[in-house]
Length: 66
Image 1 (spheres, rainbow, N blue to C red):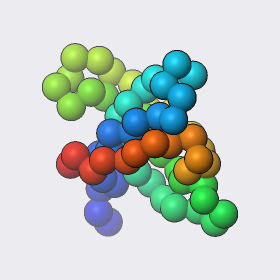
Image 2: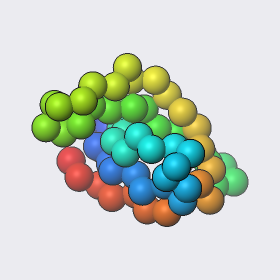
Image 3: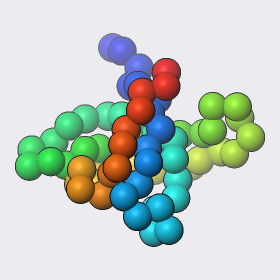
Image 4: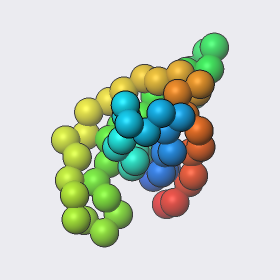
């Protein structure tokens, strides 16, 4: 099975949700996406790997970086 893409998220309201790096897990019905927190690519900051489901309206941009 393919490893999920590493993405960088730009939030529509960055002051509310500031974590930028995730593994993109799935696109869900009605505009929802499933993401798993990821470490910064340079290893400088670690994430616990929790999974979130957010509506695309909360996201300004998703950039695939790896």
